[in-house]
Amino acid sequence: MTRRPPAAVVLAALISALLAGPAAAAPAPPPVVPVGAFGWPVAGVDGRAAPATAGAPGTVTRLFDPPPHYYGRGHRGADVAGRPGLAVIAAGDGVVVFAGRVAGRGVVSVEHAAGLRTTYEPVAAAVAPGARVRRGDTLGALEPGHRGCPVAACLHWGLRRPSADPAAGALEYLDPLLLLGLGRVRLLPTGP
Image (cartoon, rainbow, N blue to C red):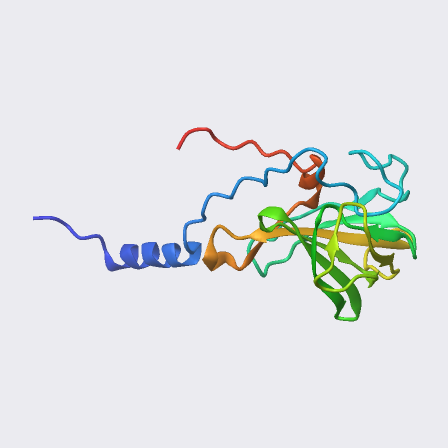
């Protein structure tokens, strides 16, 4: 005769499983980006490294901080120092899929190969949806007013791709510095 666990133990296990939610899927690997395919999104910054001088155009003032889930808190991009009116440029070749205002701020989104999408804000757009752009083409001018920016103007630069998990949302946020080979390195287990 087998003994059943007390009802309280079964109930506690069930509640624990429900609170834990579904098992988290392994994160998708970072995108494979050919060296030199992407560059900094602000004019006047060359090479792979941003300037070391604090506040100089191209200095990263706030890093990517991924949200714990699709609608969670986090920082879905990297903030790059600039100055009002500085040219915001396409980080890579693609097609403009959005250029307009969202919540009072100018936003431009560019679709690149492999479903990668970069976003730029706050920007006074100089392009229209459907425009083909090449790396370095002007998308617009940087506007002041990015909350939390420690200098006169910062560009919020985002990167997304289609999610490997359809239940997680349509797009997955990534660190845009990955496009430059500068994103955070994470060691993952090699075994199952």
